[in-house]
Length: 175
Length: 423
Image (cartoon, rainbow over all chains, first blue to last red; front, top):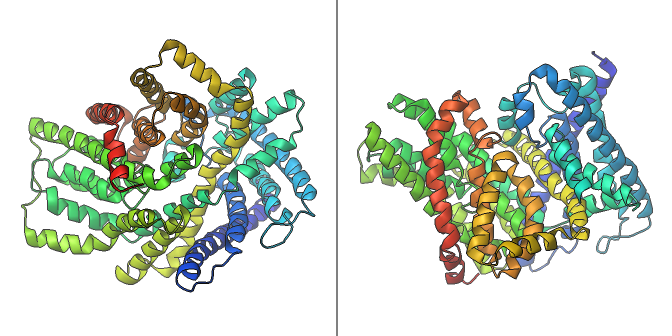
């Protein structure tokens, strides 16, 4: 199936995620070194950095969660899958994809619940709403659902979570 | 606990991502017990709200920046100048080169991939079989998580609450013991098979190769000195290491282009998310295991068999080696460490020492089918078959098991250096 609208939306989200990931990682690395420089060389510690970095880190991880589904690189046990013919993977793919989708939708729902609950709670240093941090979980899970839907519709259930060549993928995943 | 473990095992077998399998199994148990499911989301999120965990992406970034700068070629040229002249010297280059490479990267997969790409074609041109070259690269890659810096050590220190600096330093001697074991295997095979030497020794060539690799060789020194001074946190040391790697690549070696930085940052951020999502997913999973008193059950079960630390370590080594054959490294560590820590503490087994034992077991597991990730790395890059690769791998696995036995039963190998350096 082609589903061009879904593919276009998914591609646009993927590009946005890619940009977000490198910028957030770059900002985190820079701020960590800046905190050391300000503390030891300029004698003026940046007290807000640790809290800001942890919030940025949460966003980097949960957007990375979604990006991992887009790239089908989440760590899994391939032992049984490798032994099975590609056709037989459909049945397992159906169970795995359904379980993954339900779990992610649960994270969206209960993550939103938590984010709404913490709306009025302020962080200790920056005095901003704790929802800024917590919202990363439902957002990342929702984007993951989008990527899974794209793979399921465009590539088929047998290739939603895993690529056809599992052996080659084990290298791409972790390199 | 049966529902938790059965659901988890079934979801893993059908190919569900490990993190999702843990969250789904935890969710099912929590729902079954009538506890609000929001707890799962809360625990996953809270499990990742940790400043020390930031060392994972930053050490990964430092390793990637160094690799992108072509440091592996420089390090292998340096080690070839040291050991190339002995019989089987080019194969020894894989092992000795990985001792240095491990001091820069914290990942066995990255090191194995770099070694396979650089050295296996050279080994084949020099009369070694491609399968032997691939086996050397995979075996040598196991040094990555043992010699600091190490992503697995960051995770273990975070889980078991031990000093990361002590753990880093504790890995140095065991890493060298593993390297010696692999070198001896190569010496024996090189003599039996008549492998050639690779050039003659020359001080001038060694000096040139050393100067070319010096900036990279300084990185592990900076990391250890940073820990020893104690003025900065592990995360900050990782940040400094990443900046140092970028500085060396861009301004000293001039092989790292600014235009490559976004791709490197993006890839390492994604890799980190994939790894740490398992750590986040383990939070509700471990919470349930704790409520179900799994750690106490393990303590009781083991102590009903024996309370001799050496026997317990033997049992754990066998269990970990078997687990390593079937499970993914990070998943084993994240699931087992919270369960094992009470047992180890009750037997007065040092947690730093056990951390090294655990990691050596897990990296050996990366060399064994059916899920040995390093086998798949070399199979794909070097284009060798699993059967022939495993045959060449067996002597290296035997050598590493001997090294594991030494590391397990001579705690001073791990603990002497941290004591000497006052960690």
